[in-house]
Length: 238
Image (cartoon, rainbow, N blue to C red; front, side, top):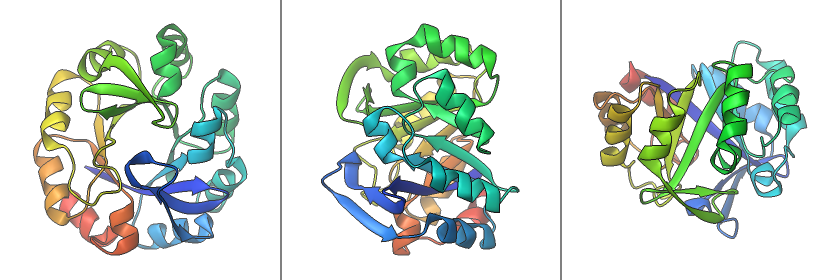
């Protein structure tokens, strides 16, 4: 199982939003490149980056910070989400050195377009499913949709996508453990790798996600606040 340490960006700085709320921001580091260097030194092979301003604006905003990380650490696989809502953004970020791109709002709102993009960029796109309960949310978690999480995931899994990232918004930034029940159900429902996000806090959480077949775990606040180290998470993930 892969461990993806998270860097969430606002104004070029590393932050976390508690439960996805922009009014509950915690700022950790001013230099995301230095933070990426620390993760690489600890053994990271993947980096999960979210352009939070991009998610809100509907277009990439923190591109210079992402490109700087990709330039400095070509050996690092970068997974990027936030504001990727047209083909121009897809091309720009892939050219900037990003390994794969997470599309959430754009996939939910225009599944036909997402399907075309998945065919055009096979296994370079990831479906981002952010949910409150079993309903999908969009626009940087600001909008609650009516789509069923599992039905939509099953439909998308027929496409040549690299993975599905599932985030339980109620767990995100709360240091309270991931939603194992829904993650396990999603793993069983689709034939694509499922990466879990939201609440991953302890070595036990990593073991539990591995045991239910998750392909990866995204860890953010817990790393910054010392609830788990990246070295511990990597060992637990095997």
